[in-house]
Image (tube, rainbow, N blue to C red; front, side, top):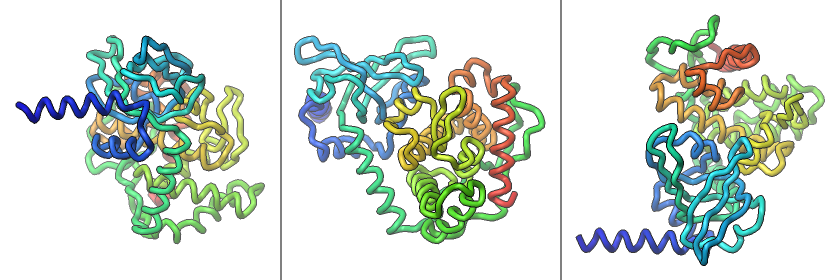
Length: 339
């Protein structure tokens, strides 16, 4: 019993220390919570249940009541999520501050309000350096094959009611990626330059390096990201859609801000946000369906039309653009893995 109250006291101390945390203290807290990567603000928007997570987002402002108060976190559609804290960090009292937030959040049902409490905070720029250093260290030290199990499945359960017709069959992993990332780099760069001949060799290599590196970091098949970026932008870092989507992964302004991407036309920033967003969608729908192919289809639908549209329609939305997008990406992905 005494140990229980000691732990409660330590937990409270961590919460109240948010404003005085150094980066080292933040990282220790993050590690103690078992968190290895950040989620976008969408993870809070769709949360049902209780979870402690790290969120990368934009703090629009704050409301102070004595030392305590509320941080106002911007959602992907420009709305607000309120995060309570016992002490507001001074560096978060400005407007539009990119930050990483360790948050304990809960929502009883889909129609209930969200309750969120701040456990710790760090500057997004500092955490991005930490993430990039960790990714480089893993890629250099281990040179392991990135997992490719997320989009494929060994068990087919049948499609849910609202799935588009004429979908390609599930990709078959007939040609696995057996090269270390450093060895695969020239092949990826060559493919990218073949598809966009306006790119210089250095630009194509930078895109390839970003796709491979962030795919390794976030556990996504790099060939899926290649397929998505090809369909989204044709490997054009300057691409802008009529709707305002930006860069290689065609991130919408609100999504980019929510992911902590300050310049969506920067190759590294865009791919960092794109791969994290894809990972989040795959993780979410794998948990919901326990079926890799369904999860892939729903993740692509959410990437194109938004997770809210997938939720409202109970599956892939009946939008021709979204359904055509899913078919194009899966067909391209199949060709890249040799299926």
